[in-house]
Length: 268
Image (cartoon, rainbow, N blue to C red):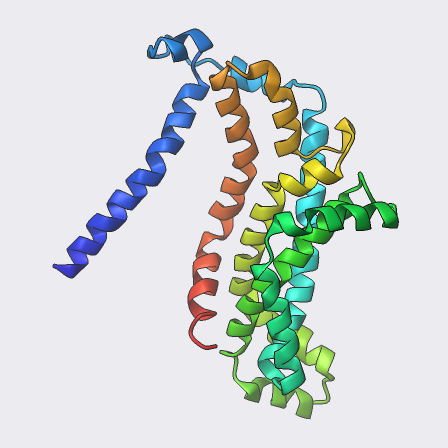
């Protein structure tokens, strides 16, 4: 009985999530007239997608978003994995204090650091560059990455590391050749969340990127959205185009993500 209730609850939850998404897909193929008159599309309207894809700077914005998302992803994976390994395998009072301080960054509201980050970026001369956006993304991504990697490393027996040390491997070799290859699910989990946050980022790119050529997709489409302020089908098409890379990315790595979340939560 409980199992059937759980399945019913999950089905209802899936329905709640899917209905708005399907509605966005539906209206993206409508004309503005059909949308406002609540008419079924007489034919699939691909003009909404064509207009967005042919918009000035669209592909430039896509490249900018990709560079920022991938750069943030790489740095968060590297630093988060090393931090999680140290916290899991070399736990001492100073290490625990530093770990708590890093995790404390999760409690800092993004809006609180917006102005300091802007001033710092201006003094460093990186304003209006991808580096200015990647910096905050890495800073806010490391705590959760460290936490996920820590839980995963704690499930790896210490005997594996000891065997590698006996064979002459240094600590860096143990980490790179023994420990890190066993954390693919954790890397997929961290990668999905990091890429999702960086690709969809709006507040920091809006504040730190000041020229049209350096905009990311969310910011760029928001700026040209004024010409579509009554054209909701075009806005729906824009949202779906921005979301498409994330859907493909998650579809490729979803099993590793689930495995990483489950195994990384067993201990710690």
